[in-house]
Length: 296
Length: 339
Image 1 (cartoon, rainbow over the protein chains, first blue to last red):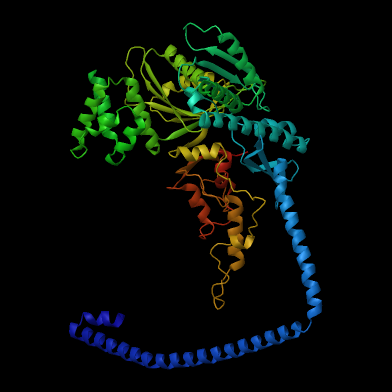
Image 2: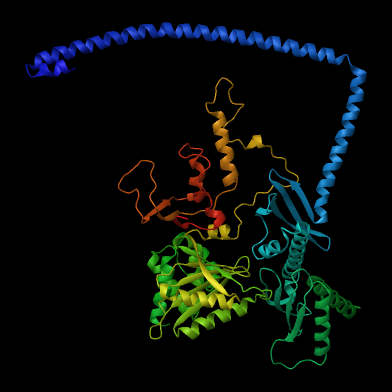
């Protein structure tokens, strides 16, 4: 290459000739390679065929051996029948155990071993209805710690774990279950009121994340002339599903009917003692009774 | 209608992209179906907006209605703002939080109005017992500036509040005080966490980003988790470094999990540490004062990018805990000093 450059000063024709010669040289070597390649390719192809043939032969041998093994085991029939029935028994037992483990969820607290500790599943329910489940992954180290969880942020998990997690893990789980179960129950009642008894409500149901303060205006009869009541329910104990404080008041400054004070006191008592949606179910039933009497 | 109010309506409606116009107007629910049908939505946008503003005037729209429309627009375009996170705490021994939304709103508004004569406060209830608050700041002598409002998103009975960074920083202490007192907390502190993605910030501080739990019914084997190394593929192909690749996958999965990562755009590290060097000497070595420098990682999706570093071969697994602790600690601003 450098030779070609130094010669260029002499005359372009000479540089041109050398370059031309180089080009011819590379062309020749390329064509040589091309002649070789098909030979190499042929050799490789032949090798591939050979290997494929060997593979097919080995596969056939393996199949033969498998067939022989099957044939030999087929001769051992009576023992096999016994084995099958034992296997069936074991399988049934296993299914049973699995079902029991699944059913453990209904106790409220169930757990499963993980690589680092225990994954606890807290299932909540209210009045026989299975509600949400929450998970807490515990890592078994000293000190015990929570890897991750699906507990809502407004449940005081940090407080509860600060009090009980290290000293009494069982109690920690129980307290957490109490909080979550009560929250689920309160939420269920509020949801039922909003969806099933919307006709009885005047305006929206005011609630908060923990469902521990409910404020709403309602009527005893969905349509028609019925005096509106304002109810305010406070659940100061986060482990219960019934309110701790109930106030029923009148909405405005209109004249109150004579029976109003009686009704008000009765309603307050109802809210204290019965779950929210059941109170409204009883209002609906009373309304039906009145209608029925009117009809007959 | 007041001219400034009409102008505010005009500019607010003009901001809305045509593709979202009907959805947002229907969510706002201030103009009736019949009224909306009288508008010709095939004209030029300016004409459409003019017609809509006239309809608002017909309905005697107030500043409050305009503020509601602004909140709805911002809810649809929350990524246009940068959100900060504040954490509140209660004094030990405080009563159970009986949060009353109406009390909270009235208390919050009163505190701001007592301090600043001129301030517009508007509320819109949102999902999961939360509220979006819009605050237009004024001063004792100036009317509120409706074009630079601050937003606060608060989920009831939680210690966290999300605020859109307002340029008017002087009002921040007042805002903090109003939030704390109205929500019956004791103290408020700004977290070192900031992003455009409000939902990701919520997922991080509410610890909702890792919700994959082994249920009692599922039996996923670890083999199914091995991504990309399909052992059944072709037995004639040998994977080099298979052991190492599997280790990297396993470590990455342990740290980052299987769930989609919350979305952040950056992580910033302020270093005030002494320079450490393997080589002897050098200008920077053996200095008493710490070196101050700022390292910033940016990405359209920072945590997914970090998760893919080790599998892509760009970094060693496990990654530095300074990077992997971001969602766990709820921080993407760090100050690192020598211990």
